[in-house]
Length: 337
Image 1: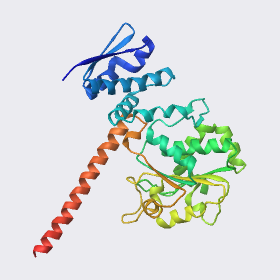
Image 2: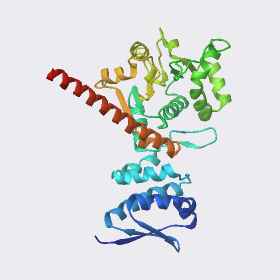
Image 3: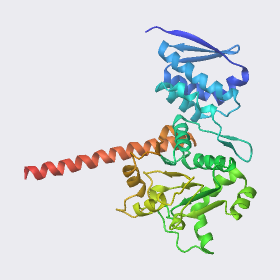
Image 4: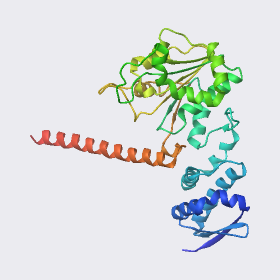
């Protein structure tokens, strides 16, 4: 086992960015790759086995590129750079900085932050209908919104329509006060929040008054034909098969639709089949329909969210294995009887 060394030249500011507070990022990289990192006189020295050094070099190349572009580096950035390095997909990371979808009202660029997100936005651009399936925090809705705003600003479509099923998330809220719009607004609030960030409240309300932006519950879509529009169906795991079929058959000429959902977070009645599950099975070989499957590695919220998603995935996998074993044991007992 031969030990080698490599050096990377950095400025003081770059070193601060990629090392983290109290060298917290360095400790993560050292533990993950079994290397030693020493910063001295404007350079970072990497010590370890040749293969580990190659991965560490790739990690630092990614982080330094972010630092030089003025992007904030956090624990999630470090973990993602490590994940790409360990799966030998670092060449794909170079594509991430090439595409800026749009800018927020504060001027912050909106772009894919992971390879999975890049694949998702590419599928949206290419296909008439795209399914974005994955856990919370993977940017499914926000990136779809950004693509819709870009298409709207570029006059590729004439209106944006945002919809989601109005279902309580595991609790009964009772009767809500106000008119019909006031009653459904709480369910649609995440969509409003994203649009405010991307367009600004004043611009959003102006376009909404003109009918160029519509935010409505899924039930409002029945009986309509939606031409020349960018339509986003959010929380699609909470649709019934009939609702999903109704939505998909509303899409008209010149339109683009994105359906987002997390198949692990259904709020349907017990025993009710999800329209998203059925649609993914029925349409899996249909041309012009793209399916992006995002995973825990694509989570771009606080690193703890990624850890929670992974913990639930492990738990659900274990429960599924237990159910399968119990089913097999019952069949074996019946066979012996």
